[in-house]
Image (cartoon, rainbow, N blue to C red; front, side, top):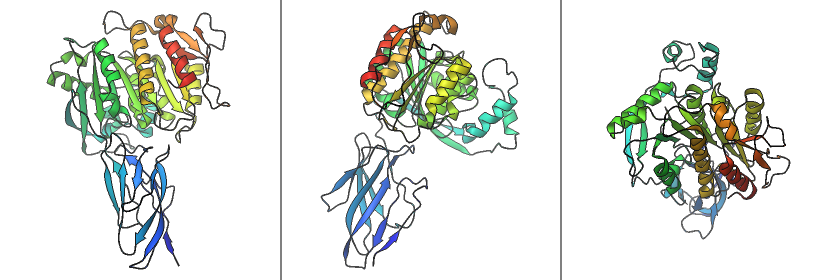
Length: 431
């Protein structure tokens, strides 16, 4: 009789296995079930999983899950080979199937043209639901329309505060070509797809065109959000001084985050709307980090997949931001999409187009002072909301804000005509 070991499928394991044991010396078919993740704990679709000596292989699905049947010789460990383009191959021995196993694929880092370094930062700076709730309760000026950035010392005395050891944060910097003085910076949480954004030609071209630096961060104290903003600015100033661009400490920023990286991309503009041109959230891991007080003072692009396991009302949260706080937010619901983009180039292009539109409508002659948001909204177009009852590509109606015929309060904010047409095309075709 076969004896099976079962692990709780609800455990946050990176790899769950169900194995049947066999007497030593006998080969027996066993079933392996797994969930593959990267080193930032993002589920990885498209990973090829094989067992040496077997002709069969499987590819992890859109959630990063797979099932594979292999023959196991009694007493010998099972070894799996995992591979995916742009990640280091992994040979994973399964020695103790009754224990939770956690293999992670490591992304291949391309630092050609990118400078890199590390800095130690306390994880006590990392944001979470507890600190954001406390900040809301203890904000010293609730009339200024943004979160309070000067409460870190008071937060350290709060009962919910926990001191944490220093952790190493990796930063990467790509400077634009032929730019003596930087005009801005795109700050990227490298949690999830941010790593490939740092290395992609679309963003290099965007940065070169605008005189922008690309700065990526990976590490627990920063990648999911950091408090206070002054701590992040201190780190950026250090990077600027080290690489002889001290103006990095003063230029405006655009922020990006994938999944829980939304805590990084949305939290900074909630603290520093006067410094943030726009913010981008790609497939956020939850709703709470989309609705920080003050986030409505900066244009935002929020994208989410209709088949994403983490979609739990983000579109409803965006609608509340629009109708209750007049937030200028562009929403893109991607029909049939899971947690990662199926066409990264098309996704990157739309993100770059949104960033460009916000630069064009909010800044003037490279100045760090923005046009008043109300003034730049006069250039805006509006577009129809995605119909969740029809999970398919949809071509929305778009028009200048003054002539748009739909519900203007609920409609998508589109910074200008060029982006409105790009957004319409992406909504209709995914390209």
